Amino acid sequence: MPKMKTKSSAKKRFKVTATGKIKFTQAGKRHGMIKRTTKFIRNAKGTAVMDESDAGIVRKYMPYDRKKRRPRAVSQKTEG
Image (spheres, rainbow, N blue to C red):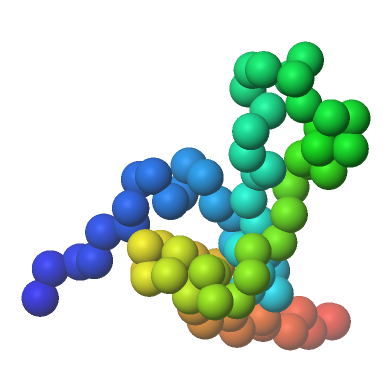
């Protein structure tokens, strides 16, 4: 069976946190800020965490995200 592909649009727009949540950048701040309210501009600053109902769809687009990977076994160093 061939490998599943990650959607290029999803990997550019979304990041998966260590706990498996999906982060995204707020939309609507490229141009036209003069007609926007100060509250809108302030609330659209930075990133936000996606709702779980929408995050499930995005997770299907990214089959190899961090959360699904199995953690590697950490070897214990012995003194001596």
